[in-house]
Length: 106
Image (tube, rainbow, N blue to C red):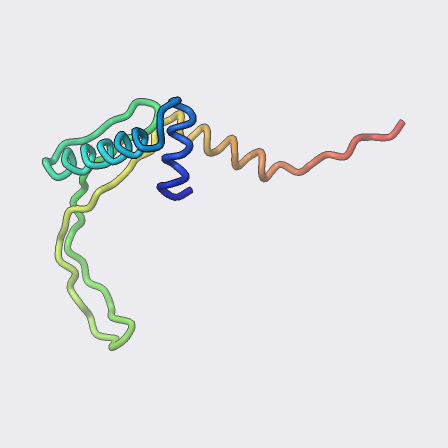
């Protein structure tokens, strides 16, 4: 699902215009980005948490040259899904993976 499909779905479910749904989605994304930039954690109960994690400095090997390169420490955004989201996804996957049973003939 891309942004325009998400906006369309939001508009239908919230019974608002696509223009208003776009404004709401953009405002939400901007708010989460600003909170993370300020060092805050954003929790949406039932959905998940957005936070900033510290990534340590590490050494990697360049595939092009084969030489060792040091990647400096940095901060990265991270998302941890909530229980409800995990359950919704696993139920969907279980339905897809479950073999279809044939009805027995009498």
